[in-house]
Image 1 (tube, rainbow, N blue to C red):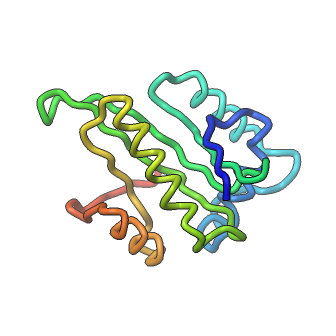
Image 2 (cartoon, rainbow, N blue to C red; image 1 turned 135 degrees about the vertical axis):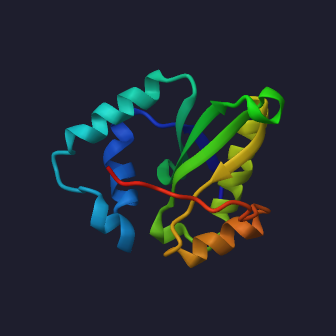
Length: 151
C-alpha cells in the first residue's frame, strides 16, 4: 500500500469529520450532518493559520485513510525543550489492522524530530483499550495520569 502524507486542506473537512464520528465515542460527540457544522470550518482555519499546529492526513490510492493533529509546544522544562502533542488520531475503519497507523505514527514522530522536539506525548480515552495497546506497542509509556475538565 503506497501512502502519501500531507497537511489537510479545507476540502478534506467532511472526510475528517466522518472519520472522527465513526466509532462509539465519536458518534456521541461529533456532528456528521450536512452541511458541515461551521465550528469545524472555523477551527480548521485556526489550525491552518497556526505555525505550531498541523492537521495531517494520510492517503492511499488518492483516498484519505487517516488523520492526526500535531501541536508543537515550547516548554521551559527539560532545559527549554519542545514537545509534540499528537491528538485526534483516526484511521478509517476499513483500513484498521493493516499497519497503516504504525506507519503514520513513524511519520509523525519523524516530523516531531524535524521540529526539534524532545518528547512526543498523547492522550487516549481509557475506553479505547485497542488504542492503548497500539500506543504501547509503538513504545509510548503511560508515565503520567491525565486529567480533563469539560467546560
